[in-house]
Length: 153
Image (tube, rainbow, N blue to C red; front, side, top):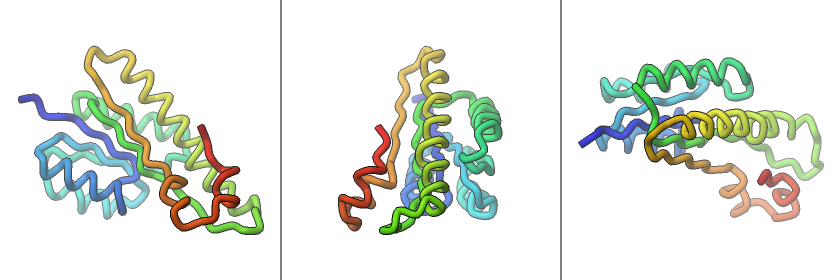
């Protein structure tokens, strides 16, 4: 049976880390991306089939370089999961608090989704892209009038 090749963006904590550890335990080839190298190293110490790249998705060109390098190192990609996201409770709608979220959750996401779409379209295999947006989880605890204008579709 062919081992699945999974890349997880935002894998240093939370859902991304949990997914990385689950895929590692299932015997997949796993590539993880995040800003905190020590945490990436800790996760990859669980398996020789784990690869990582340090990357901040708000840096467009470096993100694409790191993803291409990681994909080549892994011998391809079957599944991409984007778990990175940031946000602040911002009832005053202060743009200074919004800008980091826009750079990560919109610009960074779009850059990665475009890259993945191109990568998957040039592949002869079936592939899967999953996005776990912060806004979906935040709506559970934040009033709709705060989150509604920030949806990116």
